[in-house]
Image (cartoon, rainbow, N blue to C red):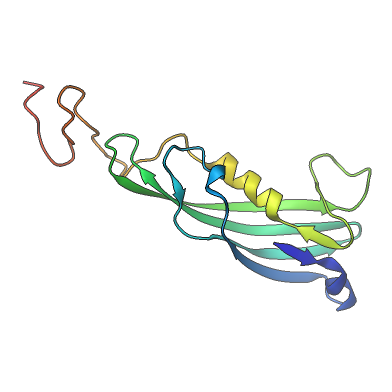
Length: 148
């Protein structure tokens, strides 16, 4: 996910759109037994501004795992917007991302955004009833007699 800013400057333009699809390591996912179900998609615009480059856009990803309530298969999908500044200056604001040699690498920013947006748990559906704590029946499909 590297963009060559030098080429953009030499083209006489100050803005470039980008789209990347990349496979990320499942170790980024904090949920047990979960994995990315498709490549991570990153789309946006890069804008030049002096010693800074502005990147804005969306990150879209999907994770497949098990429902935290009923243990059935579940998919979590997320779209994250970003608006970040990259700087090649040594005295840049600490909240900016660095870039060097005219190359802006979006990979670390994308990884950070994914990790920060990852849920602690996800569900097969919003109203999942989970499992009976006594007999283990999936309450989405059956009514157990344990409650009676």
